[in-house]
Image: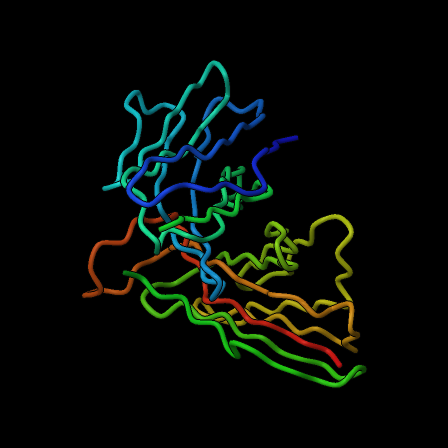
Length: 113
Length: 124
């Protein structure tokens, strides 16, 4: 069965610093997709970044980049130049066949001024 | 971007009553929608896959008679929590997968997934 693991329940980062949120996954599929979402206290799920299993380049979207290491089955999210508004829950997710997403446990990021 | 609307955003009800939550895709048709449940400080747990025109597929451990799902049109899926109890209090969130984009609404990729804003249910 497919599985997503986030081992950091909470993380702190100083404003303007970079932070890495860890995500490892387990799947027997050759083709899969990995996602990161941000969930502020309002509850909405905000899509941040996507990495396909066959993508050779690491995905980047503005201040977000995904450190994809296929052999290690890891897809860590790197947020550069942290801002106070980055404080939120962050979820790593994998797309299963049929399109449904399974989510990791989440990491609560707190950005300190 | 594409919008998926959930209604109501929050609801308080008495124990024993039923509550209906709507998930509507505004910019596209969605033959498939997903319903998730989330307890505070926890992950999103998939409850069921809603398929337009057919029965929903429920995840293991989810009571289908308790959580009724109806996907009556290409843009609307509903989740009804029947005979709600305090332990059903949770955050329910849907996501919709683009099957056909509506013309004039900008670029949308088939298969792309969008989330609703979520519905917070409190059962007294």
